[in-house]
Image 1 (cartoon, helix red, strand yellow):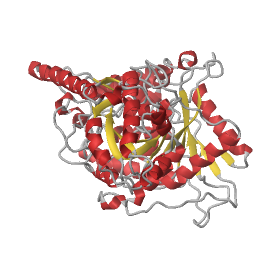
Image 2 (cartoon, helix red, strand yellow):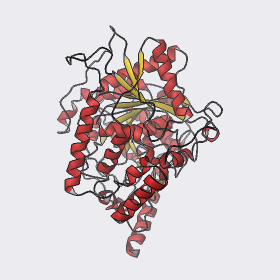
Image 3 (cartoon, rainbow, N blue to C red):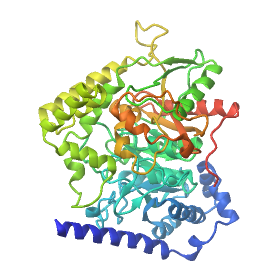
Image 4 (cartoon, helix red, strand yellow):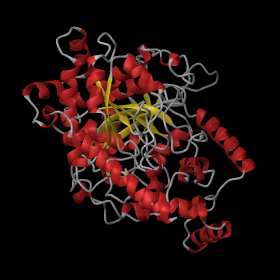
Length: 564
């Protein structure tokens, strides 16, 4: 045990020193202030950068310098970087494919994405100093498209939290407010985007890991459905876990860049790089023009009600849609709480053993996962007694229902959960409008689902001790395998978004999570909304997001991010 602890301490020290040395050893130009040319490069869209590289009016090396400078500044502010690949990226930029659809554009990668010769430790000290043997499928495609990987970013150990902290790299701050989380597990990616230190980023999502950072940090993302986006070759904290699909997904600073990124990836025919990707080209989708678009709103998941700030963002969107002739209805759907019960059991069906296998003695973990794993290791009868206490003494069936099922599953129990998941998905299938299905009435079904990405804006560090139980608004759509996007709408206002004195929490999860809600302290933090489509409808979700952004801008209510 002590040997394991000493090895842990040494690995953390060595990795932090390695990161510092890589930054210090960079050419002096990377440590200089941004020039006017750098600022001009940083202000340009991805499509503009690509066009300039393709016509040789701008070099990939110049773009790399500008984004590397900004990334180092962002790291100094937030501690967001893990692998600083800038020195190697100089060579990659000089040989980049200048005719590709991402010619010369730097791309940031979540730490788990495999780059040959570089660690994908994911915050586990046991994985430090074990570089990947080959580029993953996604990195191979990006290189062939002309993109230039240049940094990798921080994640929570286990990848099962909405904030990033680990002993190897430390904690990552929110780009808008120090002391707050930037989301997770793709938090470092969101930070770079929000601060203008990246235009394109790659995250992953199993319970909200690209959508929560987009919401907390004020950027854009679309979680892909399973088998739509490349993933083979990347590291994982839970390899083999497919009860709740985990997907790689793009994140960007602007909605225009998000569309450019998706189109560029599919121009490269990703199914030729990753056997698991379905052979579905990018489709040019147009929203209906002969009838109003019907938006079903999930106002409350029955576990944690949206805070005044998040509810206001959602109402801002529904109001602008209704004003422009679209239909907004309260979503009639199967219980989201039932989905949370199923998803939480599937994700940790092995009792957390796989996610913990690289965890060394005395290595710290995310506050939420400490609580989760402790419960999984308690004797079965103790958890049953605990659930009985909440159900019958505290009169809290919501929390009791989650405690009651929080234990390692047998194989027959796991199979039963998969069957239950499939039945749940079939009931959700009826939520959607489908004019081709005989017998459906005109007032049935919806075209899109609208809801909050999380019930709160970004919370203080350590907030995931209770916040991991409040991820139902994103986790639900992983279970269903729906395409789901998040876009920023507004910011927290200290006065408008204050919690009413009449607020009374309905259960222990809501009570503990709302202890962190303080509109005054959170003022200025971004707030997003979530736009959800059916499986494999990323193009359609993008069009829904574009419609909302256009209507908001026409009304003079468009989101304003951090200055470059």
